[in-house]
Image (cartoon, rainbow, N blue to C red; front, side, top):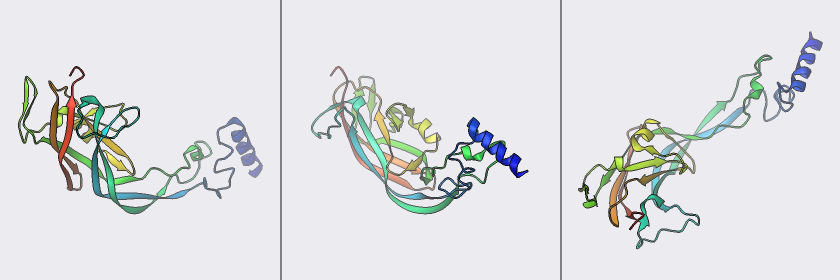
Length: 216
């Protein structure tokens, strides 16, 4: 029986079914053992921070006196305060000769926040004429005029982004971009309210975007 099992394992390694660095070959005594257990420090959010970013090839700092093309300014939000929560994560329980669990990744998973994004609101604070047909009053909800992104490639409506129940990662930002071309150079002043699923809200008052259209 032992000879048959060894023959099967040798054949599997030879055919690439079980990688030679797999748990079977290492006899479960390496960092990729048969049941690796990784300590993953998930965390609880204790503070969020916000900043305005000018996305360009050389990442120039924001000049508070300058107006920027409206699609190059982003409001970045990230976790600036967290409380680690130790959690033991077991990637897999063992192996199967027919469906080798050794094919699973031996790397620990990413650490995430326990909290998820439950909602996001953006409230206008400066009455202005956005276009000849759009007037924004103080207190208006202008969330629908922004989009959200995590990679500057895929953009989502704020409503869709919130429905994805985004969980925060360490050193990761998500970004808000004003997505309505202004009719003239203007200074947009607004409050950002982040709502987490644990009932905690973070409000960032007085955010400013000094924006122009492509033709201004």
